Image (cartoon, rainbow, N blue to C red; front, side, top):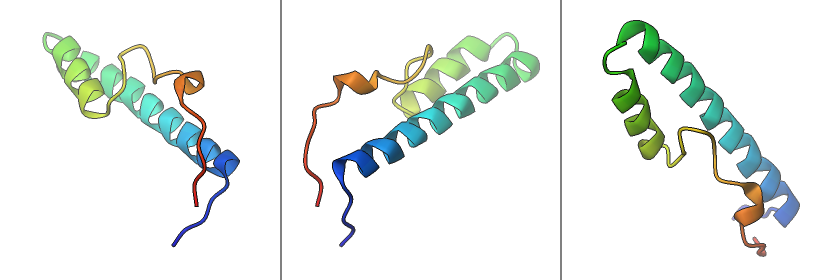
Length: 69
């Protein structure tokens, strides 16, 4: 069992969202250089696979608070 406070879980989730968003930005830049004619669909598909929008992650304020034990 792993026990986390709600604050710790939020911090970890925020960091994961940031890392995935930064990865998506790097992948989009790579796609523009390497696949210029297909960069948009590749980036969109990757964003869908990562459950992110092309503009960035969902707002942290839309999350419902909860207790994690």
